[in-house]
Image: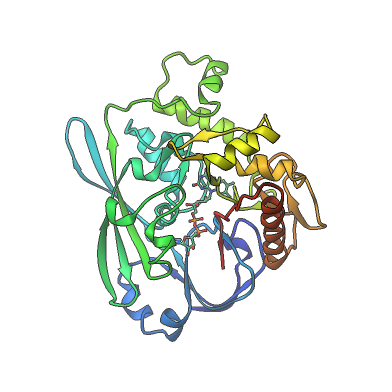
Amino acid sequence: MKENISLKAYNTFGIDARAKFFFELKKREELSSLAHFNSFHDKSLILGGGSNILLCKDFDGLVILNSLKGIELIKEDENEVYLKVAAGEVWHDLVSYTIARSWGGLENLSLIPGRVGASPMQNIGAYGVELKDVFYELEAWDKETEQVVVFNKEQCQFAYRESIFKKELRGKHIILSISLVLSKKPKINIEYGAIAETLKLMKVENPTIKDVSDAVIAIRSSKLPNPKEIGNAGSFFKNPVVDLKLVKELQGKYPSLPVYTVDEKCAKLPAAWLIEQAGWKGKSFGNYGVHKNQALVLVNYGGAKGEDIKNLAHSIQADVFSKFGIEISPEVNFI
Ligand SMILES: Cc1cc2nc3c(=O)[nH]c(=O)nc-3n(C[C@H](O)[C@H](O)[C@H](O)COP(=O)(O)OP(=O)(O)OC[C@H]3O[C@@H](n4cnc5c(N)ncnc54)[C@H](O)[C@@H]3O)c2cc1C
């Protein structure tokens, strides 16, 4: 147990907030003794790669860094493999591990920062694939009963950047492992974004999952700011799902508005487009601001306070609402 630790190296925004207590969890068995520590129940935060949090102030409690390791093949047949992966594994290392074995399913999710244990939290997604598409079940430590419990896919209530762990069960469990079903006869999914175009540029005609992963890595590296260079947490806001009546009104005013139909009542609008139209893209406020190429990415140029970025997020939300009548909500977790 360490005391009064800077969390700067533990969050991709690079916010220099401090933790009163800090513990790196390397074995499951350590949880039983950790549960006797007062702050465990009063105020504790489980952390992975810190790539989806905004530390708004010092954390006056216990931060537990999840470093549980291990990848286990549970079962397989001629078509599928079932993998159980400990929560502290780095997400992209897992993706590389599966691609090296030609097990398909995770290639479109290449290069998403963070650790495996956080992936069910917001049902991570990219390039037309979400965690739920390959998810089987997870094991979690129930902080109240101090027991390991299992959640199947239905119980996790996955939705777009959502799960039960972000809603009614927020803060109640520590995810210990996830199990995934991957395919030995992968179906390539290159419909979304610029994957097909990038593969063409790479002169690939019959792409393998490794080719798809390489294309996704190339696209992401060219589009998104690297947190090692500029502090950020990727997309700060979720794309809002809006009633079609309002979408039609907006299309009248803004013919270039991109619209992605969800069903006969709703459509999804790109939050980046709304933020850019409202004039926020590239705005800088000293050591923090909105990225110059990605309106959805808020950045810390160095030395910003979490509170500043939180206030900026609130100003953007209020402005988008006043201009378009649409509420955009953060994807990032405010701590
Ligand atoms: C450059 C960049 C690009 C990104 N691109 C994408 C993208 O394409 N798609 C996408 O979905 N996300 C994306 N993200 C967001 C982020 O990478 C994911 O949400 C990722 O899963 C977060 O993992 P983490 O380990 O860093 O979580 P953390 O930031 O450490 O934690 C996030 C939340 O999960 C909780 N948590 C963490 N571990 C556990 C656990 N074991 N048990 C219970 N709760 C836990 C934390 O308490 C916190 O509330 C991006 C982020 C960045 C910086």
